[in-house]
View 1 (cartoon, rainbow, N blue to C red):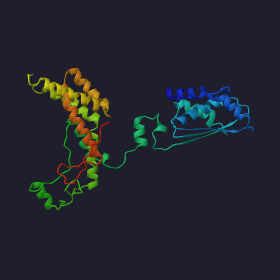
View 2: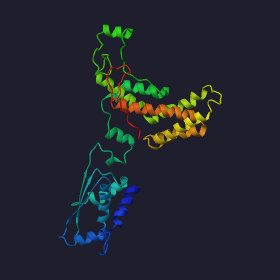
View 3: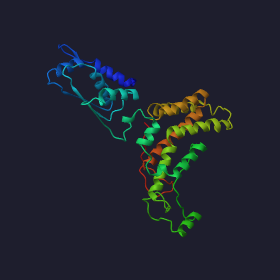
View 4: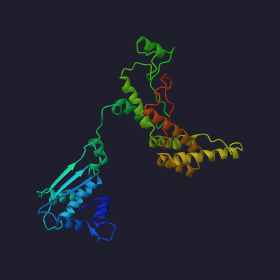
Length: 330
């Protein structure tokens, strides 16, 4: 019978603890204390064992453990767990059923939310994703979003300009939409002046989802890593010159690197992704790519977070006012 290492560690700490932990009174362990307490009760008392989350897992282990003890007056066990993960594999569950579940009048009650992944912690991620967090209707599930994000992944283009369509005056697009009565004028509350063929809110939500996914730090730095190896490596290298290698430029680069290392590499919430990229550049002496890519990527990540939260316009030409607030990546 196998149980999780963390569950076994918590179980050992509970069963080896002494009561009271301090003082001159002779110390008792858990079973000694229970024996003394149950001895004062009538025959066949009910012993309630309960716990929440990890405590619930401990409740099942302790119940099995206490069932092996002879307390004299034969207590009945009632186990109640709340949002508890299983303590072990199927062999543990089978053993628990044999010792407790299938031996009335002992009772076991398990309470949990089917949308909570913790009580199903031993399921695979795919099972948790598909069963407990099923795909909800919305922009993340549309074929348009999937198609655009698939293009982003396959093209490996780091910097993409994704905007909602905005018609500008005295252009063929403006004239066509005007003929089709699909222009919105004098409404600066909207992200676009075009009457879309899909619901407006759905289009905006699709754009925000694309921005959120495309500029996730790991995905963005992955695309830049590809460009450094495949595209940037073929750039024509400029010869070193006294001007490029001047102390002034070296000092400026060191200042930028120190700030990058501190604000992104230490305080940033995507520092692991950053260091994976940065260490590869440092090993190859590609300091220029380290500085330029990180500065631009940091801006894109912050902007995408603002965009997906609805604090950035979905079109560069939109007349909708925005609040100039950036969320720090830390």
